[in-house]
Image (cartoon, rainbow, N blue to C red; front, side, top):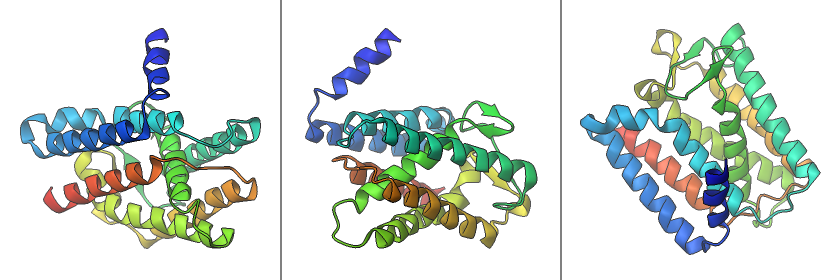
Length: 221
């Protein structure tokens, strides 16, 4: 625990420029590792760790208030995101018929614990992209949710190849994308309704590099 705190505290003394260099190198190494057959299996196993690294870096450079309201909203997105995925896997009524592989780490109720963090991560960075844009909040919610939908379009066909999750008959139903967008709108609306800041100098870069990472893999694998 002390070692983690030491590593985490260092991010607060690193400049955004240095952190951005780290993120770029991180994803270049990750992309290369995934594309080399000899190392691909190892890098697939590191997927949960990669998400945690992204989350730690984002948290370190979060510029909004770390108050109880923010914590409550972020915790709600995490818990609801995970809960919805559990229901989706167990009932097949939300996203369609799918199940999770082993690439995303420890599972509870056949659902990786880290999937709730992934919902929070995507909502946070998507909101951050439009945080400073001078448009009404309802448009920010729609645009952020649309960004998440585009992300999902790229990731879904790739996910089985990375051992993340699998679809029945290898067919991704339209229901999945519709549910994804509706849930994203709800979560992003929570952030705006409760006026939670997502201002972060690294958010756009992290979203872009992760998106490009998955896009490259989807084109090559």
